[in-house]
Length: 609
Image 1: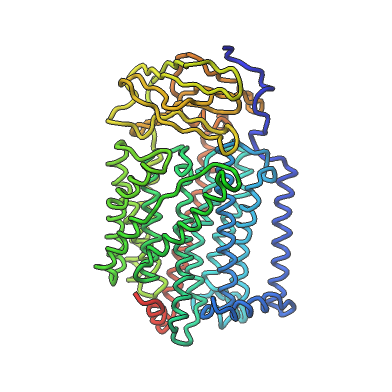
Image 2: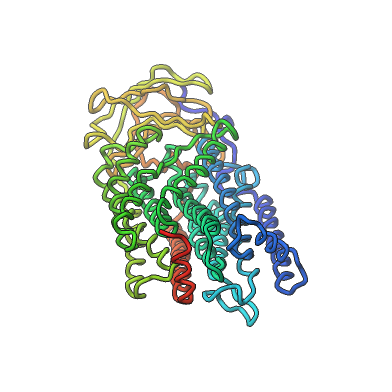
């Protein structure tokens, strides 16, 4: 078979930034919507526009929301709907990029519309929350703008988180203009999108507390309504923090497998400890129920049965919820101790539960390669997340310990999570590893598949088994555009395919290896790409070298960009993310510090433990 095909036969979609007309149009739509929203909100503050006043009154008349002020209920419901809309668009977008590849611009990808709409709605909900209440209604933690206008701190935090997420959309285009298209969820501007959206649930928790009516003692019906709203917030928090794991959900993570248990443990520790302390007995299980309903529903809608894209697995979190509930039977009255004990159980017993679940449903099940380091990172993530969850609820209920201790615990938990992520991101490449491909048949058309034997020049696996050694093929088109299948060991240096692999059309097919810290890939078939100036890598019998897999998975990245520019751009995003995290901590601390004593007491008795 020829090793070269004309570039005209390959990919022609742009590999860098979006066309300027699409960028201008998308930006213009957001600007117009923002101007209309601003006009309506100014009209509300000046009394010229009664639209929001009527809407608030309508929410306050609804039995389902009685006991929570309408000025808080309206933005909370808008934020929740917006988050679910963005979540649907995000998983749709990820599935499209995995199954089809890069898109031609923000308006050429249908998944971008719900993302953009959802993130705008999230930012708008914060602005609405800041504008609707009177100075007396806003609560003791509100920020003073003028004598007649004070903004609730939850609204300020929600505005910041939403704006940060929405800002990631135009910055993503700037990033592509500088560095090419990074086809990974963990691109820095992509992390802005999901980080701002996921962390907005902390702001929503504060806003819900600020809007709760404590003028009268709650009856059983009111407590049930508050319980359900808290379930939505904590379950949403679990969903938001789980989006960071999406590449593992589909089976094409571009980072080490040990990050998966770490991320699951952080999400479980923070969300489920929050749920148990804030909701009372059964709260962790209730949050998981909401998570499974919404996140599982998104998989169904995005998948082959409805929209027609790729299916994604979901972590289960049931064992972790049971761990938190069990720990609470002993230490429920000591929130920080509950966070630590729950984190330890999540990192060990919860790890075992998710390990079994990955064997059943995930394309890349956890292996012995990640057991030791995976458990250690899961314990670190579980404990850090549990401590943060405990601090959050103690802040909402006015029971935080002295400020110095809170700062130490908060900083230690955030730094522990950051250290775990950095450890998971540290990779190496095996030196001079080569392999000979022996294909059962040669490719003769776009729908070709073939089996193969892979003969390594030395054993590729150091321990008992690798994290993964697979044939991975992606971007073959639509709901059938992903193929992940393990290689079967014949001898330490000879492995063979377990399923025929695609080797034609738009498929990018490779042997992927992750063993310990080593991550590398060997190309089997890559199509020509006119936009990148890349020729075809033909599927044929050949001896090839393993390379850094990013050069294959992310062919679109520009290799000629100076390292300092990438470093500076990454540090800017990191700085912005750090500011958001610190702002959320400040907001919870402010709410705790300025809430009145009777407010705190009412909050503690609002939902019986």
